[in-house]
Image 1 (cartoon, one colour):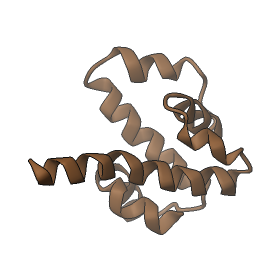
Image 2 (image 1 turned 30 degrees about the vertical axis):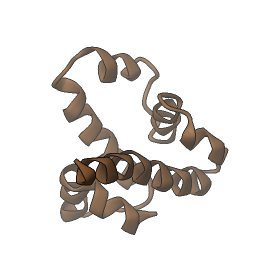
Image 3 (image 1 turned 180 degrees about the horizontal axis):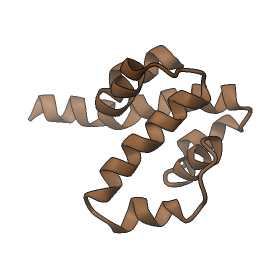
Length: 102
């Protein structure tokens, strides 16, 4: 139980910290990384996707996981990473890859 109490906040706060650095590099306001759901809208703006993709992320239960993987690959492309292994790392192990990217 103690491990759960320690790991769950880390699971949710670590991605926000890296979103902070992504937003800074993209020229966006850094406070936007800390607002839930709005940070997804800003990430969609960074990767130049339409806003209606938000509904795909929210409504469809299993499709949203694949769409998130595609968005993370597009985010890697936005920062100049075009190799296949970088796409695989962005989609499969984003917790390990995006600290390197940021």
